[in-house]
Image 1 (tube, rainbow, N blue to C red):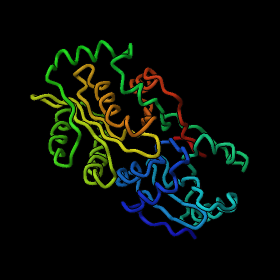
Image 2: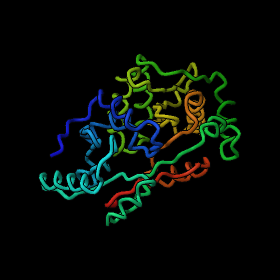
Image 3: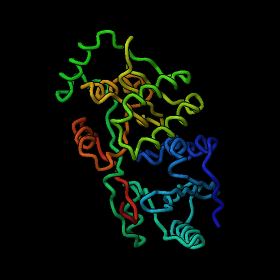
Image 4: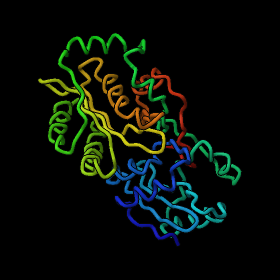
Length: 290
């Protein structure tokens, strides 16, 4: 039996030690992302001598198991059977994912039918490319115009005491947000701000003396920076690339690569990611489809 417990703050740092230098860029393997989204995905974890086990709730599917994360190593086939027994004890199907691209062949060799879920994939970028979006032909004119209209524009590194200002800004643009995503994002924001210093999160505000135009926050794992949340005023053309670039400039001294979460089937986000020249896409693979 696998002795799962509720994923908590202390598990973040511990899990990170198992993942460092494994080059697992898939977004769902970021421990800070798991923790700050815990109210939505309800993750559970178990550290054994051989493997780390994680299971979580995917609303469209139900309980899903991460592939076992190797510690000292063991028999993968036998370990998967142990996980299937755990699922059977809960009387649920054994759903497995996310499976990294590098592990896909191993699971197919064990007769698992593996499917790619494009809407859950992670886009990987060169950090310097994002930091210099003002040179990108797709955004150069928009960013130049944005700077021209907001001559007193400046960037501010986020502190805990900025939480009220961020909430006020989000409330202002609330009617422009996707209703289904709004409350999970607010819960994630609260967790990010509550643990801003403990998790070494990096966030910025894009503002001038009159108004706020954007907020973004993310975390570091190994040599990659992960954009967790981005709120921007969609009526101010150029605010999004300005925000992405601003955070990349802050985080660029710590990381070579940047990761952005999936577009979730949104055409405008997919077009944005592809226009930013991704280095590659890390596919979210599983034995199910969303």
